[in-house]
Image (tube, rainbow, N blue to C red; front, side, top):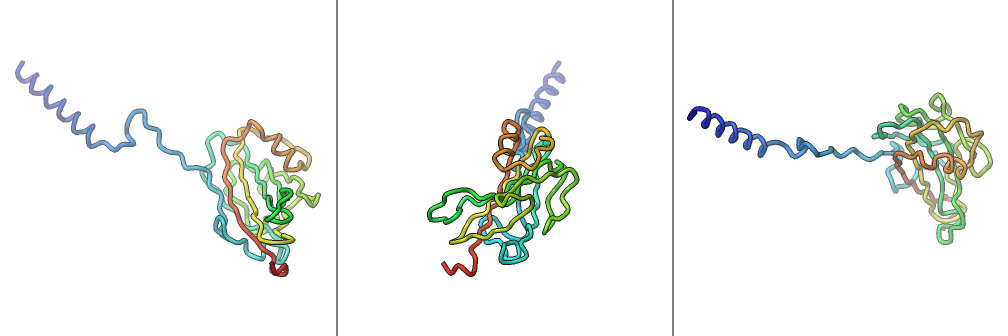
Amino acid sequence: MANLAVETVLGLLLTSACVQTAPADSRPNHKPRIPDMLLESPAFEDGEAIPRQYTCEGEDISPPLDWSHIPAGTQTLALIVDDPDAPDPKAPKRTWVHWVLYEIPANATGLDRGARELPTGTHEGRNDWGSTGYRGPCPPIGEHRYVHKLYALDAPLGDLSQPTKAELEQAMSGHILGQAQLIGTYRRERTGD
């Protein structure tokens, strides 16, 4: 009986020591933090100027984009690039849409510089020039912000026949699992303001 008591006490001491030295993340009800979706570009940092080659004063090609930490259950991705400062950042009157992509495969991890070949299955919507494809920054006055927004969706949207940004946002409603954004800025050299 004495040996049983000693074994019980030793067992309790060992259990207590293990509980005290166990890392916080091993608690039974603790859920590890899932990193937020991340959207970035090797061409510019968030909040910094977009290099001239990606604008109307350069090659007018899309910048390279990389993304990660896509939520579990994501079926497709969508990307919208727009300028909320049009026409003048001191008195913006509208948001000007530069690029609309959707049905990007969930396993895609980014887009190459000058993305001429999009991931298989990707569809394009219409920008505010009334065409598909990327059109770079070309602000008439002042320094504008160009917001790149990536959306993770829980369902495919199908072929929406070149939707506008508003039509795509309506189709995405109720299907967004997560989103990330990257903001670049640009001021045209010839405006002199």
